Image (cartoon, rainbow, N blue to C red; front, side, top):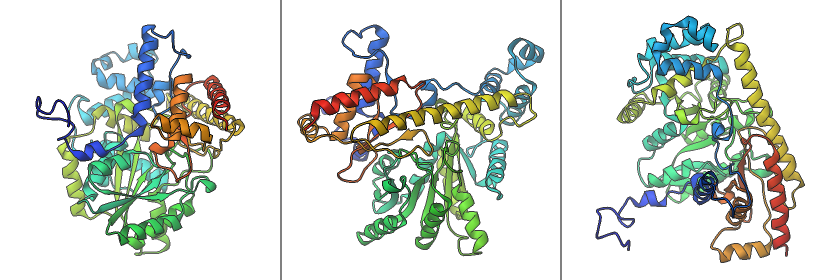
Length: 488
């Protein structure tokens, strides 16, 4: 019983138990400790720390780790935030290097939203939703309806909306990929609904295994779970895997057979290093074209965000989700749900518009935009490769070649002596390894157990966002010392 129970209305014993049940490893104990170390370094209290810098490789937060904002985006934002700057266009162009297309975009956006300090329509500014629809049409080659597009406070808000609408009671379940981004399991815990795990196939570059999905579905149904939806993260988080068109087709066919909603988390769609990104929307439309009527009632919701890719504007909280195949009465209830929160941040909505409608070839800002975009992409790919090559040289570590997203998810081996020490400290072996890594190097990663993993396997997730590659050497040096210390 909490010692404060008699002093306050709320205690740990009487708050919502489902909130206590939720776990979110990405910002868990190690992340909190890393911020304590960061504060100590900033205050000069670093005499006992064996490192001079904290690397937050635990979370996909590009600009915290040195990724520069796209100039066009930030110049337009500056005018949206302070429109009086538009009163002297010549000063903007001659004194500050603003191009005419920056000024024109800011004026157009202001004409549509009036002010970024004002609420928009609950579903998002209509003109911005039309820009998103045009982007989807150009990406997939099929039409998109702006009335079925909702602007959101990042993709996470869209996920929360859909899961709240879908989960009608404690018997509701969703098929969730394992390993997975813990947003999904945490939200299901809060909603008192069931996570139905299906395991990705590490031996096949973390691809989907339709047989494993069917088996997980049948088992859950036999236990009385009302499985309503399947979640797909493509490209993958934490694995970085990028699904093939055949994998997408198999999932859609299965979902149609079992009348499951497909939740396609596609926030890393521009972070693809091998192959080409194919959306679930396109996969569905291709199936509908090949087999008329059979897939007409399959429901797909796809999500995108300004937080990832070369945009990296996590703090501005912008994203969208598109509904395909949903009953109009359900769409009305989704609209009602988002209306309770009034609207997504309007600055974030404007960034969504710029993400889906960037400068085009021939526009004054295009050359700089292309230079910045390509530079960020190449830097991510180079760091991913450097980290992958380092893992290949580390004893007992195996890692899939980077395909996309901004993460690697290597398998690690902890010697038996290390496992016993972990048990003494009340930690899982991968947590113990990651804790030691943080204390020795200042590098914060996330234990694989925070995402889910097959029994008997150990992993950790790391981003490759941090600038440079010198920190990779700190990982390899730590690993050698760790293995020597705990070698059986």
